[in-house]
Image (cartoon, rainbow, N blue to C red; front, side, top):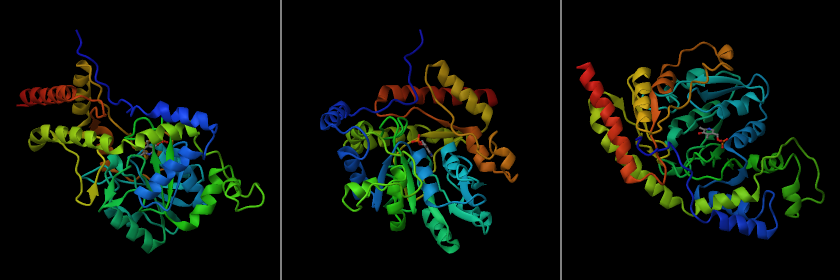
Amino acid sequence: MKPTHIPFNKPYLSGHELLYIQEAIQAGHLSGNGQFTKRCQHYFEQNYHIHKALLTTSATAALEMAALLLRLQPGDEVIIPSFTFTSTANAFVLRGARIVFADSSPEHPNIDVSQLESLITPRTRAIVPVHYAGVSCDMGAIVSLAERFNLAVIEDAAQAIESFYQGRPLGSLGQLAAFSFHETKNLIAGEGGLLAINNLEFAPRAEIIWEKGTNRAAFFRGEAAKYQWVDVGSSFLPSELNAAYLWAQLEQKQRILEQRRQQWQRYYKAFEEIAARGFVELPYIPSYAQPNWHIFYLVCRNLQERQQLIQHLAEQNILAVFHYQTLHGSPFYQPHHDGRILPNAHKYATRLVRLPLYFELSEDDQLRVIGVVLDYFTRLRKTSS
Ligand SMILES: *Cc1c(COP(=O)(O)O)cnc(C)c1O
């Protein structure tokens, strides 16, 4: 008989989601920008030093808003890590921008800042750091480089709610930032996201783009005499039902984080020995980063061992998964890439594996995962010695 299934992820449920959704229904306001939306936005502005927060239907939508706000022209260049989700790049490709892909660091999957300056040209408009696994990029170096060359910094903070750079909240360090509440993230709304606006100049236009190119939000605040079409825009607002769900999650943030921290650290301790023997690399957390324990990963020595480990776990009914394929090598973008080889992006694309990590993962189940991983490496050691 197969042992019980351990999934890779399970959406967290606080227990108050239905209550708040019911409240939203009773309030008779189901479209966007109602009481729950305002509460969630206020929460982000208060807790994460964000000048203005706008709830969106996804982080993808928030990144698309950021690209619109930059008024990118075809041919403008945007520097993006190759090891990331398609949305990070798509948002800018949709505006006609050329993507200049940057490599990951040798120590961690985040963008390698030592190579950034060499990628800047007179056409460069923005750098988009992605805080992989909720671990901060080297924002000090990125922001000072951007200031020197007059570039925008757009943080892809999709995975980085409640993560910090030297004590400063991620999402508050770039001119603009995107968060995600997709069901795979730490705090969820089913689908959902948030645009953080830290540069005051973007705020009025952001609200217009958010509301289909109209001045609706200003009109309802009594700041405009007429409600009309004033700029480009789209439908970026989520329904109040999603915002109500998210509110129930935000209330439980500390509990979720504490549970994930314990699980993450249990994995880390359990694998220190195989790391010391050189079988795997463990996540590296730079001293400037305070993470939110979003992902626990191992980096295997090669693709073959990673696939064997995933297979070995699958045989015990445990789902472990790899992550992004490089974007510079993707079928869509490879023909447009300038040909530079990005060895570290390739390393994480071929060798990284993520282990189950979610609120309801019991200690017993986690110990089972650890046992099966260690068993794989014990066998490997025997066959290779
Ligand atoms: C999840 C994720 C996204 C997309 O978020 P959605 O809310 O699903 O659009 C973008 N970038 C990164 C790094 C992500 O992890």
